[in-house]
Image 1: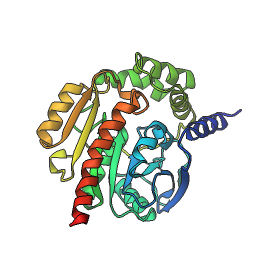
Image 2: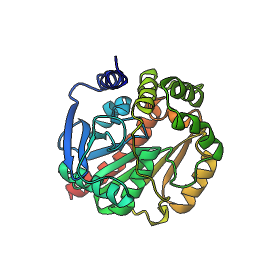
Image 3: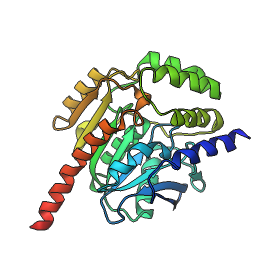
Image 4: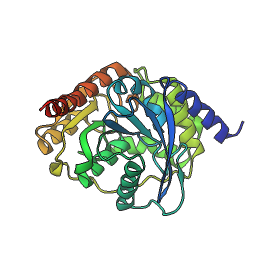
Length: 289
């Protein structure tokens, strides 16, 4: 079996763990076709899920059932990363391109407004988009987001460098084992991530400056991994509170950066669902009036 076949076999196995009723949608954009996994009531408020680098939209299998009870879950394979999204047309190179792609994606899904939920790199993307188009974002959830409130720890970057420079499945697997030690991070996802990093060597993620969260105008929930090696969770929490005083910020002490979102999903699901339910209740009250 080729590395590509092995990756997609693991990808499909992860998707098989999504709840019955999940459908796949291919959304054309000027930058290529984007694969979206959809679950939940078609008429419910959408929640757009943006994964961390190399994770693919399939990673949300443990979150979709809970979030899909009251929302329309839309989990994206980020264009330019591993997965079933296919770049074509305009090249995706700059933050401006990235924001235009997300605009086109929401348009293609006929979604005028949505909740945004992002992990790691997906958190940076979600925050950047909420600042770009606040009129399209109801609520924002960030799971151990990187490059949003603080830079990476230098040691984290140094430990990641060998895997990034000479990616192999064994090296990526060993890296994840070290970074998720002591957690119940899903083994199937760890295999998929290792195959993504080693097999999709042409992955091209758009990166850029840290956004200015002080300009954020939508309700914010930040869940940080207390054992994250990517950054100091306490310092990130303090900076997030200073930047967005009204935000809900919590440190999940037992989690590491890569353990999110597959480890102890009941904890993250409850916090996310409660946060989004506040918005649902406000809408219901307004509708009753």
